[in-house]
Amino acid sequence: MPDLEELKKRRDQLTARIKHHEIREAAQARKRETKIKLLVGAAILSRVKKKGGLENSSIIQMMTSYLTRDTDIKDVLGTDGTGSEILKRLTQPDEGENQSTESPVTSFQE
Image (cartoon, rainbow, N blue to C red; front, top):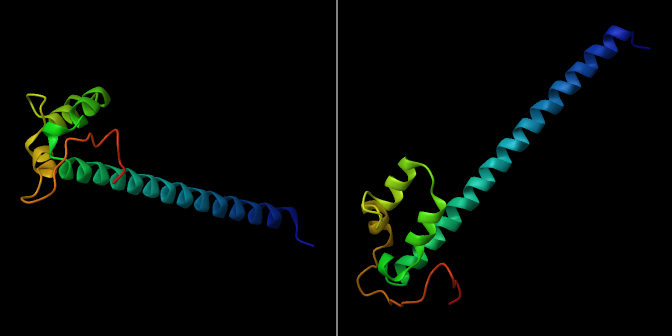
């Protein structure tokens, strides 16, 4: 039968292994959450682009009410609040794409 010190050592090893697995699982969950956020954002940007760009969407209003940090506001909405150059480029309809005035935020059905 193992002595007390041996049992404590095994307990500590198991505790360390459990902690390691918990940390790994938490990291994987954060990665999945980030992936989902990116995919949802990409889908919204794609819908805005297909529906005619920023002028025909409520994305600016949605982002204005959502963003709080000055750097995020500047990066997404630009200095004038109508959309940064990057956002405009990401949502600019491609030539010849079918455009609609339907709001991309309120309707995702095709």
